Image 1 (cartoon, one colour):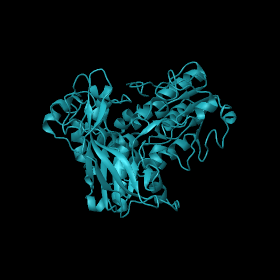
Image 2 (cartoon, helix red, strand yellow):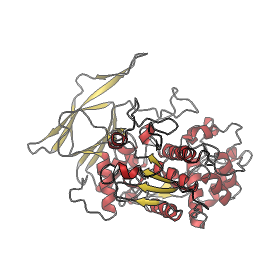
Image 3 (cartoon, one colour):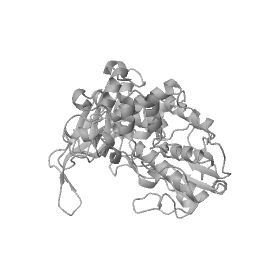
Image 4 (cartoon, one colour):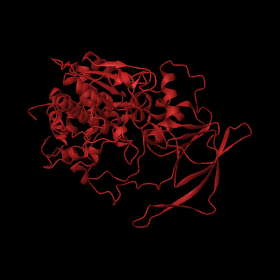
Length: 484
């Protein structure tokens, strides 16, 4: 694959970013694409490694060496066909995926790995620019109807695959626009919403029906839902984790997803009278993951006075930890573009109290430094460091602590069993109610967008098998192309 010895001849090239001062003045995407002539070189770095561990690193089983080779040969349309054979939405993963494929790239043992994610994004954007990505409605219909609940990446992937199988698919979304977490959980500077609209227009042209502002079990009865031949639940893991901390009810302690959702809605013309703003405030973001990073970037764009980040875990090493050797996902410090825009990062910090004034308004946080005691065979124990208490000025505390699982309204009304991890229980994506399936975060818990797409595809295959007795839909790593 690629050019023989290309990995020795060419170095890795990534997208660059606009200067911080320029990009924080708006909410637009700010990456600068790799020049076209350099993309051929990047495809050439794929080293014909014999056993492509990138396949196992990718939850979708993307045929990575194959599309890298096509880019090397400048056969871009063939590269697109290969990429789309396993990935319904490479425009999303090419922007948002943490690229586990790159962490398992064989070249990464000795040099910088192949820039797989950027190649993927470049392929799909070239496809849209050239008009190669067109609606592909099924030639015949089966007469079967399927309801998909939730329009995040899992729901959209399941809907497209089931529609390709010829079923009549309706997607129900309780919010006012399609996209789920992609729409309101991801800031515009990481994913402009026109990217979602562009894809939804194709799905509609393929014959999928979308219904927004429909909250199944609330303003749409489960009796109406059960009229469909099959149901796929893709509502995500949206139960937000909080803290059992004194003062948590103070005005100014806000869930991260509320903060991010409000900003996106305002950006697209909605009126939020009590929008939470970071402007001129001392902001503390509690939680060191991607959502915390998104809050940091948004706070900087609001014009926060200061932005501080707390993480209760130890600071990861700059390089790959010995505890997570190649080809495993590495324990390694991640510095996002939002961190680079301005943020005081702190590790091994636990919040003990949210301090408020007589009006109940947040004025500060009391914290303590902690350590983790590791005993073989036992759960890690959190130890507070004596004499390390500190008061931090804070007007706005954003809780970016992740999610505890899916909401249970649907499971209760539909009679769906819950597993030991608080998710909707399923075997081969099928719940204990035979015609109801589930996929994505609702089934596996909070996870990656690339996993959600994979889950939606695999669930669609099981639904098709249930409805028809057989299926031609692809399974992981095999794709839609018979020649592959």
